[in-house]
Length: 114
Length: 113
Image 1 (spheres, each protein chain N blue to C red):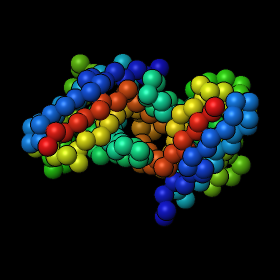
Image 2: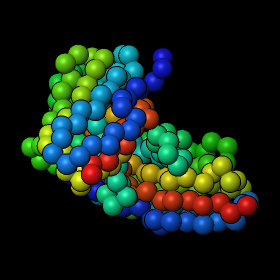
Image 3: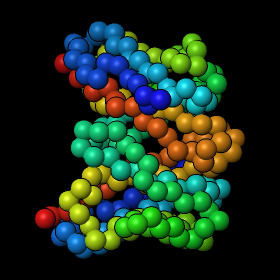
């Protein structure tokens, strides 16, 4: 398996624009997580899905953020409208249902909002 | 919810010395404690983990210890090498049911050649 695949790797956009980040989890993994990493806050869990169903979105900072998982092999994280404070590295991760919790991270999407 | 505190935030050691990173957790129900290593510009990757029915686990130069009573766990790296330089994250979660991993704030380890 190629691992968790994220796109784009880098995104530079202007404030107010819509940003869509994409993730393909490892085949067979039942859980998918979206994390945001910044120097100030470290790794923050934004939302996670189990079998394509959102389980906990309490980490989503505000209504500008939304996430979907239309099928087992694809998820998106959307920010609309984007703001400079959204600049961060966004990681997608997946894990097996009963594997003891190991998270397999993608390479991350580095977002810069000007 | 779970709260994980990690210390120190930065750590510099001479090559060959040992490094110790400490974490505390708040939820006594947590029973799974992984450690992730993140090299500069790379993704976090699991390097070792420990479950609550075990007090210590070793894998070559790295070891983790767990004190359930005190709710703290530590990462020990012996004979450090320059390639050990990275940010290390501790985490805590419960196995079974819905998994939610809470990470510490990270420790930037620098191994000086």
